[in-house]
Structures are given as structure tokens and as C-alpha cells.
Image (cartoon, rainbow, N blue to C red; front, side, top):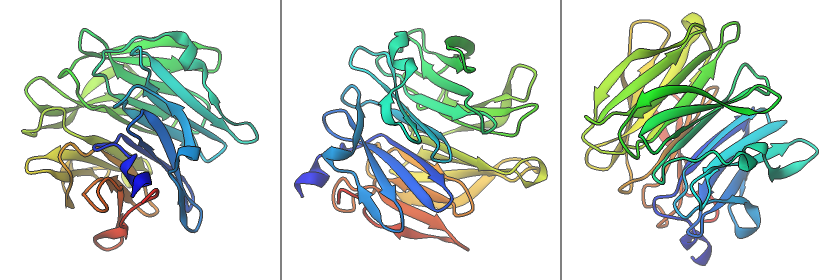
Length: 296
């Protein structure tokens, strides 16, 4: 059990996929960010699979263009944004964002997205004034982007995107009244979106994924609810948000990450083998996909 005991409770979680290949990122007790891989079978998650090291308890976010480009974001021990970058043929290396000295609040979460299948990036964190800040990579360097306004100190942040010309961006966070809210970008500035609901859990877990666009758009937001349960809000292109079917018990404070269709997958910690991350899959109903990801 020594290896699984290295995984933090609760650990930060992020996940990406390319077709049927999967990558899940989880944090160890020393701040190490470990990569778990699925290539027909699960493997990794060991000390030799550390791609970067952040502060103890660092949040993480991951975004990708297939497995040609993967970016994982975290918070450094001096409370600045860090970036672990993977490019096909180059392997893992410290990304340019790590050198920018972008300060965030000690309790900041982090979210990230590639836009339109291009090497255009948006990263979101919380400043010491408790506002949500965007940082922008458009190919030539990192700059500060928009400020999305105030949020609960220590709120989780989740982001997703689809389309191009214009890009569509969605960012989710929690306000001081414990409401989960949505910020939207559809090509003409940031606006407050339709999703707005209360959870009694402060700094509630947040994870989001999406697929398609227009009438085929699907968005699934996973959030921490009362009594240590992760629940789901769903959007299917029209008709508004509704309560989804996902409702699973978790360890207190468990984080959550999701991967989109063609097989919708959700990752959280529910106590299996202590600190292990459990995968749930949707196929005409929710079921356990894999009970305990490595290093369990």
C-alpha cells in the first residue's frame, strides 16, 4: 500500500483523452503531479511518472490537442502559476508560463483550455483580491486577459470550450453566497450565463466537460453537494440546464474531473483502496469503469 498512500486525500484531479487513450493527473502528498495512462490497460501513477511538482495541495488543470500537445497547470510553492508541457517528439518540459511569475492567491484553483484545436490557450486562476483572472497565450507570449470578477475565496474553477469563429468559452466558479455561476464568451465579451444554483458546500468541487456544438452541444458540470456527494448539471443544446443522473458518494473534499463523449467518464475519490481514484462511465446508465486507478 505504500504507493497508493503517496496519493493525497483529497488529491487534485485532471483528465484528457485522445480517442480511446486516456491520461489522468493526480497529486501526491509531496506536491508531485503524477500521470496515469490508459492504453488498453491502466498504468503509471508511480513516482517515476511525476511530470512536475507544485506546492503541497496544489490544484491542477489539464487541456490537450490529441496527444500532440498536452498542458498541465498548477500552483508553485511561491504561489505562482506553473505549466508542465508535453509536445509529441519532445516529451515533458517546463512550459513558458512557469517563467512569467504570474502571482495567484495562496488558495487559488486553476482551469485551462486550448481553443478551437489550435495552440491558443486560456488559463484561469484567482487573484489575492478574489477575482477570477484570465491569462492568454496566442502563440507569441503570455499576457493577462480579462478579469471575470469576484468569487468566493478558494473557489474551484472549471472551464470548457467548443467551436471557432467565434470560439465559445464557459468558466464556472462559486460566489460568496455559495452559488455556482457561469461566465460565457461567445465572441463579443464576457457575460453572466444561465447556470446559477446554490450548493451548501463552500469551495465545492467543480469539473466540466463538453462536446459537439449548436443543437448537438452537450455540457456536463460536476459539483460537490451536501453529504459528500458529487452531482451533475446538464445542458443539451437547448431547453436550459437540468439535473443530470450522476450522483456518487465521495470522500470529504474529493475533487472531480471528466472526459467527454464518445464515452463520458468521471473521476473522483470515494475511498476505494484508501486514496485511489475511481472511474465512472456512462453507457445507458452510470457504472464503475475502473475501481482503483494506479498506483493502487
